Length: 202
Image (cartoon, rainbow, N blue to C red; front, side, top):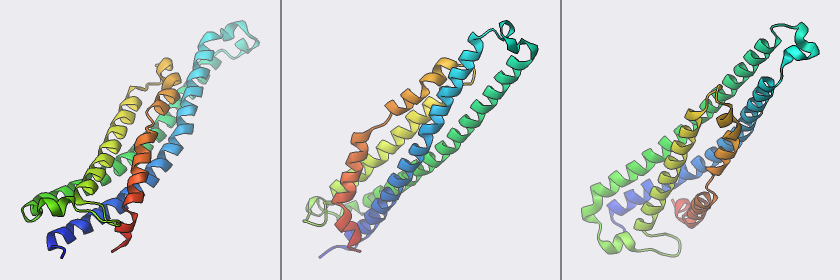
């Protein structure tokens, strides 16, 4: 016979895993939108460097005295626009991180509140369709830690980018890609598979 404490925890866990599934989709979608923006930033930095390396006064374009200044201004404007869009994407990633953090926090608070009424057997018992309470709590915390760390690393990277630091801008796409963690994402996908029967057995 399932206790009321276990039933309420199962309900909270279902909600947590449903939220995690949505978050994983949104997170992947936002990251996919970020890649071309980082690529644009790298290209703009290369154009800006090329402009610095060319003496326009030695070319036929010297008849336009303020051309270099105008081109540089346009490049800086374009960089600011791309950085602005990336910051918008970071807001979406932050919402994902906050959402999973809130879900996990709610489940853990509920667990702490009911811990006295849950014995070791209840916490560790598992069946073919329902993983153990301890496993599911651990899986949710692993996912929350992954998204928290990923958000922090990506935010830190973007905070280092400035239109006047071309080297950092040029290396940004590579550094951004290096932050990917396919094994952690695979682990979350695997977790969602493991709990799929449990989540659907409302």
